[in-house]
Image: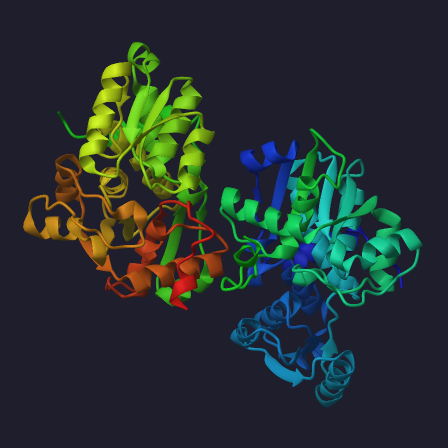
Length: 318
Length: 318
């Protein structure tokens, strides 16, 4: 199958426009000073369901032909994709089934149920998750919407960068976090076409650096035993996202856990916005000087704002 | 002296325009649903120095004739007004002296020093504060800029409501927190002229309800022993602000500490923005049903976002 193109991203933008927020781009003099660069933050923490994930989920759900849509959609994710898919399905008026492993935070379950999705429990193992999902798919005839191994998802995630470039114009660099690679590959497709002089660089926690290692090895190396506070970035790339990333991403750099927590705190303190650890990862690279850049115009995708206010990372760290 | 008028507020808006942010007005479907009303949040947490206080300080500093400006400005405040005045003075290139009582949080001192102001320490008593300030005024010839007992400050604070009404149009109600009454009286002046059908209602913590009691008694009753987490609202009204409030404010209601913490948390969780306890006080009144309103268009001034991230109130409360 052909890879998604700028046309797919533009189609996604038109498809989700009635439902998704066109999120603001914020700047902050204090962070610019810290960074020695001019930063343009695309605030997907303000997106519906609290993260960029709604863009892809909405594009996937509204792309379905009426007949399959009626049978519903299904995914296994207790994170932002699960909530985003639940909301997108509700907006289209179709059923959503979210397979959630035991031990998932109650607040995440509540968000999914709040959007009217049906939760199916499974044990906390890949095997149980897949068996449970397969069973539910067979039973209902629903369509599986994978969080990133899906062209409609990738095209949808690319719409954030499209809006960013449309709003701020020329950029030297665009930074995105990388987990499964849906946001990163969508971003790279959009930026590569509408701002071809801007480099796209991905940032990944050192404690879950499969994309970094895969990029250097030239083939996908799955993540095992991820150790990072950035809960959205613990997953592995898939062949689909890796192919796009290999072709279009200039580099992948890693950051320490300390830099992620410090970056998150600076964003809260100075910008007065709530972002989740994963969202702070690109700014951490600027802070930690993992990137050798000064005086540049840098777009930063702030991926989401879903965080447990009872378990903030600086409680333990200070 | 005549009270400030809409003309003074408009003059202030023009004077501060090169320096202050025109802050965004945000809406949130989830909070609307909770509230049973349509809420328009004027985000002064995104204002320079993190609070609406910069508007008044900037207007006062840039209104000074050159000769007195050169001798500098002074205030006693370890809170948002101190930092705001320090920043406004730096922008005009004049000295600022901030009298800070011992025991003030190091983070607040650091903010004031970060803006280049000179800190003069005093003991933590009204007497010491006034003696220290008088001494420094005499020594330097600086101008005292009181945090709210000052017409330029009142006119400056009114510019937030002016922008709010210009952006969202007709409102049934505008809610502002009340401490010393500078924000409230400026808001009432602006709204009373540009949106005369909108009622202005003030909200105050029950644990620091001097404005509520003064409003009912018909004369200023000073606050003694305030007990509230809303640190910006512990001060008393003065005759200047009370005269305006009495004439132009429809009502004052109070809210519990529990409602303030819950409101603050909802705003962080659902809107993904950082606001300080004082800023959450008006929404607390909507949540707690201290106001008998449904289906209305309500403007809410979110006064500021300066909060100690190491001492969040829900740590203890849950």
